[in-house]
Length: 176
View (cartoon, rainbow, N blue to C red):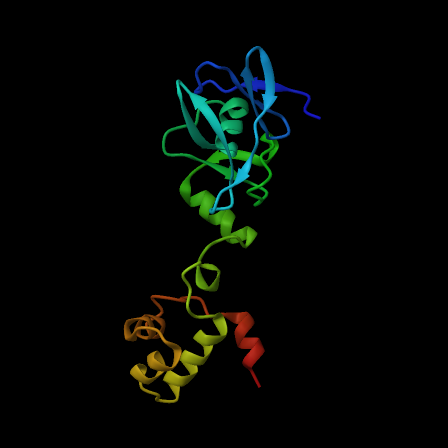
């Protein structure tokens, strides 16, 4: 049960509040009610808030940070310091730069690059195979056709413009 409610300054009447558990409340007809949260495609929790006469979808972590941490400084984002997008307690949130947020994502393993990217066509094991095939003299075009990717994708892997870091887990899996 929340122990503290704080007003969200950017939301006009009717009053909206964030609690110390990371939930959003709205005052309707003199009664403060918990708003229903939903998970967006990007993994963040959001609520529908009434602004003037229109409903607006807002990220819960942004509203909680505003209520408990104050206004967001220019050029800063709200960071989930524990790496869990579904935990929006004030103690789990901080303001920081985009770079610090990206470093957090890498540290927590939630960064969307390599095979974790939603548009990834190759796995780390594929990349190891591509590099091995290139060392053995297999033509880039043949590798691209075999894997169903573009020739430029194979070229970028060879030049380490994509998959710069050696996929170590996959290397161990295919090593003799």
